[in-house]
Image (cartoon, rainbow, N blue to C red; front, side, top):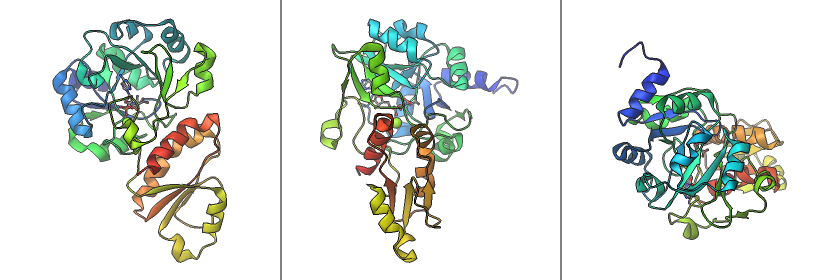
Length: 321
Ligand code: TXA
Ligand code: MG
């Protein structure tokens, strides 16, 4: 590779040659490949260990490319894109005919998103085409929010990791399906239901929590997903208070992520009690606790409030093992 090339030029060159390039977005790091190159797509699914019927999101440089990737763009899609792009929102729309079935899980719809990270936007602009980018983790594991998380998970399967520092949002985008007559939130995120509804009116919310319901290619994720390797359990503040009083020996094998109780124990992380900070740090905190290789991770259940919807969804899936 020519040493005089900028890092973005190198990344574009690699994508054009069918290689995988990881890049930061405002939500989590994505593992990128050319959305129009079947060999690159196959390489990406193999690297992730992702079932081929599980669709991926196409990342675009700007709003204007929407029409190139969707066969029809309803008014609601324009309204949402105008309001939230670049940003942590994915729209599911009827796919344009050139969109490969390999990236849609064989469905007639496609997921589209313009991310709000400067490096991602530079890359997408310079590349010109669509870049598929699932979260840059092995299938079912925690999404990465720092470049080093990607490097440690993939090593040489990924040609280049663009380092944009830690992700600001921290959990994956809100997904809104506009390919059917009634708009539906398929995956909650930090753009919450009321914000979507303030732009397009009432929406349905998909509640696919059980493994059985969600195992198909039907959108969304398997119930057990976004998981650390240590078993994770959600517990109330009262339960944690009780556990905090147990003898040191019992606490030694338990890792805890909570809002307040911190009994001078090294396996305890106290998280900030506002949803934006909690989401930003969530995967990093879980990775840190997972690395301790203890018997379990206890997480204090966050408030059941709209601001916490996306976080509760990820924690419930992580606990669904
Ligand atoms: O924030 C994000 O969305 C991150 C960053 C990298 O952009 N990406 C991400 O991708 O979370 P991934 O592949 O880990 O999750 C994509 C989700 C999956 O749950 C998939 O089922 C859904 O998007 N999806 C993609 N295309 C779809 C389609 N045509 N219909 C229904 N669901 C779709
Ligand atoms: Mg993912």
